[in-house]
Amino acid sequence: MDSFLIEGGLPLRGEVQISGSKNAVLPIMAATLLTSETCVVRRVPDLSDVAFMAKILRSLGAEVTLENGTLTVRAANISGFGDYELIRKMRGSICILGPLLARLKDARVSLPGGCVIGTRPIDLHLKGLRALGAQVEVDGGYVRVHAPRLDGQMVFLGGRVGPTVLGTANVMMAAVLAEGVTVIESAACEPEVIDLAHFLIAMGAKISGAGSPTMTITGVKELHGAEHEVIADRIEAGTFAAAALATGGEVILRGARPDHLGAVLDKLREAGAQIGSSAGALTVKGSGVIRPIDITTMPYSGFPTDMQAQLMAVACLAPGTSIISERIFESRFMHASELMRLGADIAIEGPSAIVKGGQPLSGAPVMASDLRASAALVIAGLSAGGSTQVNRVYHLDRGYERMELKLQALGARIQRVPGE
Ligand code: EPZ
Image (cartoon, rainbow, N blue to C red; front, side):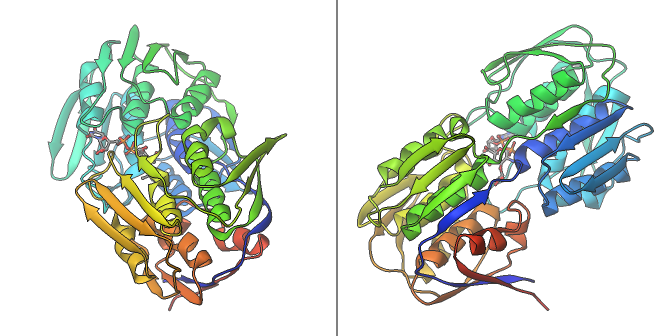
């Protein structure tokens, strides 16, 4: 398995192009199953999760090409019964359930199961599909949904910690071909949900209120092919912004959307970053002074859980105490013990991490456990003295396009060490 070898202590300087969003493109790829016509999606990031989703679409019978960031899908003759192992391996693929049910009225996929950051049930997804009239059977590790027809309904999708992003996506994609009107209450408001709505509307769907907690979908008979350009990845942009602050550098993030990063930029400013934006770019400057911050993760437009680990790495560098509370996933502090291997002082108390920062970090071999935890270890390694080896960077490759090359372009001493 590949690892990254980082010589820390250098400020990041220069420009980097932000890629298309992983969490927008995955449901958009699933949405191509809603029509037999050709769909073209641009600014598709070169990520292992995207390659995996393409494999899943092909396993269902779709013709898929992916070249230089352009994806073409024609799902003319597809089956609703997905490959158990393929789908089980990538949680994000659960969002094929809604489109397959809508198009074929019968679909079966393997249950996604939990992951290191939490149990991650799909009860809200199934609640929403049931409300539209689907029969739901969970058996042998599979979930099967089927219905002679789907009828629009009012569906409340709020859960234990608020809305569900992929649950909202699944119900949207089932409702676009249902009879009548569906109203999703407590819908997720993430920019990725809005981007999916834009793609569905380009296919002929009738959707209003995307981006607000109340979304209205008027079902249509069928959808047609469409073209779409995916939004920029706000989490990739936030990660590079945090790295600029942590290393006392200055970076220009080409293509980043400041309007999608409100809560993140607010916390980075609080921590000492100078933030500017000009035509199509975000500039982030660290002054070398980092201040402690308190963060609580929340659904959008609150502070995103997908940036929690990266800001914990920044907090390790801030003299004083920072409190980081994770309210979305129940076990998303795997990075804390690895940051402590680099010399950080972190105590976990229930849903909160108390970070006593300011002592210099020193490089060491560390282990990546999940996508965003690995990004935090890279940020810490860039700021630490000496060399850090981040192992299992396959986690990073799931969500960051050629991260080490982008960091090298910003002057970082980082290289990929190929695994056995
Ligand atoms: C999406 O996951 C993202 N993944 C996650 O990003 C992100 O962390 C998450 O939204 C929250 O912002 C993709 O878009 C592919 P949720 P999703 O359903 O939709 C609970 C990354 O790092 N819940 O909004 O699976 C759930 O357990 C990844 O890129 C239920 O209880 O997340 C969690 O506590 C990690 N029942 C909370 O809701 C349900 O049926 C939010 O989960 C569904 C969710």
